[in-house]
Image (cartoon, rainbow, N blue to C red; front, top):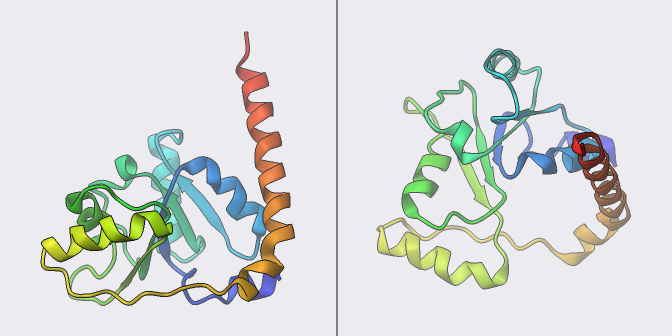
Length: 168
């Protein structure tokens, strides 16, 4: 439910790195205040979004690697990687958005089963300590399926509308 989504411990103050179009999915699920931080936003809009995030008015900042690079965002407690980075440098850069200036933070990377071995090998070769694995049981995900499917439908409609508006 929307109230439960807002109370999930991984949502307050996080930077979520994934394609900004999926921002629409997050909005469709509701329960959190989210904003996009990408090249699709102008510099002044990005500045406003960062300020609102740092003030706690935005709980979820959705970004790509390109736009997240080099920004110092205050108050990031969690980073959620929607996709597995291919290179250690990218991973370090992403998770480096949290736990800055001696503070603690958490980073989560969502992996498909086929990505897990390569990702863990990359981290092991770099000397990263073993990470905790968190499997999400189907009984937790199953009740969310109708809401997720509706969000996908909304996303599809939004993409079609965007294409229609751009067509000559």
